Image (cartoon, rainbow, N blue to C red; front, side, top):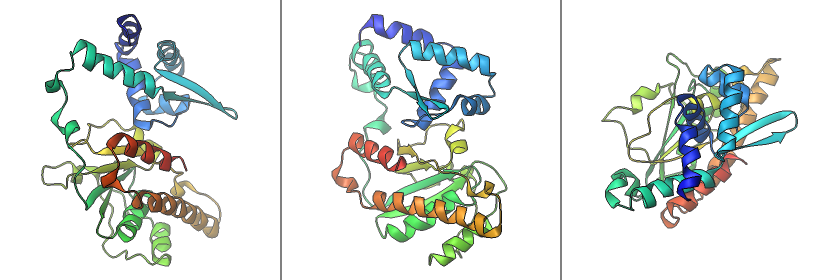
Length: 270
């Protein structure tokens, strides 16, 4: 990237509103987000958001794709990577002291600590915790947490786990603050499994864990008969089981961080 290419990008990101939109889209990357969801998450007026999206798209930082009647905006990761490279290699003259020490550290050895985050920690993230702890054996230690305080395990979720043969006696709903203390386990992977959690404004996790967004529909919002609600929970459980089976099969110690990040992104879109 040359200075003439970088300047308009810096100008675009220099506005707090546009920077907020870009940061939210990065938390969902490589998946896209609909404008209505962006506006709701940032409490931003639709016409204001429309201007910000147009400016970011003009700068080449984001792109829009249409799926049916819906428009989705996503980060152009190639352009974002080029900007970061320009800052480090050109502006920073490739000084090694500009790279955070956490980002340079290699992936720790198994068992790997994995945190699944949802809004309520009542179903989806609880499913993921239980599934990976059973699938992963000694290689993984899974945890889950919610961004909303005061949540409880959903009885439909507990029933699905019991039918699948999981031990539910030690499962409990936990707030994310429990994992933000100095005494908390150091995470190697952090996954968001709902769009609300992915859109939350939160500080980067210490230790530079690999992250990915594996969003799934909220079964708690399912309507209809008890059987129809139970089916919604079972479908989400099945989707997570498929993704976590693929994740647990990865040869993590034999894959570099960039390739591993791409694998995690791909799993989240299956």
